[in-house]
Image: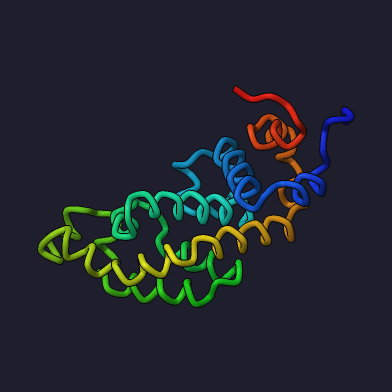
Length: 178
């Protein structure tokens, strides 16, 4: 280890919650690929799937709106499961409640959803309550996910070389980034 190379313990201690979640998620996705991770494959360790699914799905929904969750082609039940695991059971319950409003066979199929509900606007109305809850819990999600990473850091040890190439790490050790 070079003098400027931080251990995973040091990285977890010194990085902000946001940077830790962002960089771990980024290297997990680089290793496995988004298309595989979104399907929630058992071949990928739970900790890796969880970090990527929570961070990327939440970020996507914060930008696109919670209604978009229902037309994602993914394992929809994994999202609330992740919230339970990281200690956000009330948010998990809200997501499960909204999932129950949609025919399971229609999830991930925009045309089927619109056909069932009559319009995309109707789907957005159904998603509004959970969307408000999700947005209000953004900081809690970030903190809970960072805490999960810190408590399970040994499961991310193999990612250290990739983490050391990330912008947040380079800035953390005082290096210059473009």
